[in-house]
Image (cartoon, rainbow, N blue to C red; front, side):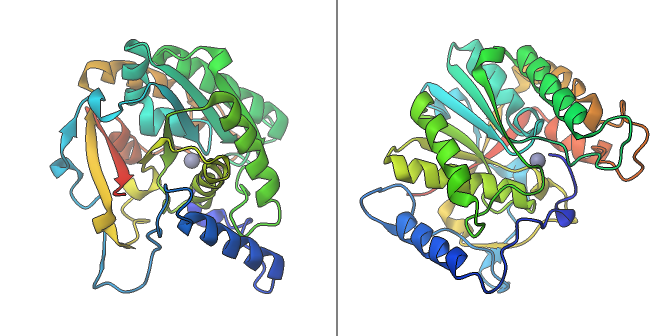
Length: 297
Ligand SMILES: [Zn+2]
């Protein structure tokens, strides 16, 4: 999860970057190309209030489903930061592992942005700690260390479609997907308020399209749970929201979240501006269900 999304703007493109514009156009062409048959026009946030809505306005009314909603067994969970996989999908991961699904986790960024001013925990040490926390948390949920990969892109600067380094990062994602060939991918919600989350969605989607594979894509919200950051999103009619019943593994998920001591204000004490997951936000991730979204094709 890392940091307040408002502070992560280092991946914004320069206004007059024609190269970035060409990348944007190419990506749009890919998204709309019938040959891929996966992605249609994407819901892009607009300022018009008349056709927009809040994604999580009444999550408790979304239909409750079981694991049959995830019908294909090679599963990849994509986390923008070390902890998003557990916060957003920890229950699903535990249930899937318990059923014998092959669950792999790809962590996109290095997590070094959570405490940028700490003297005791400079970036290399913080990166190491956060990776260890991820391995320990996922161990509780049933994922072996050799099923966890760290892309280690810079926290707060994961390349978006308009970034000059987007294609380089996309190639890393493509290689990963080519090696793992998932038939279900959990991605951060495409319109999450945090730029790294949106960028992670874009990278994986572009890699999926370039490979011509058609996995089931399931998206999970993180920062949309923060009502101060929620933004209205248009075309919600094309998004199916549902809840996964995780009551039977909730204790496991809570135990796994507790491993992330660096993000819970229990480890690093020399950076007053460092990130700390609030109790209010935690309540959203410790319910007996998790919320997911899928695009209606
Ligand atoms: Zn995150």
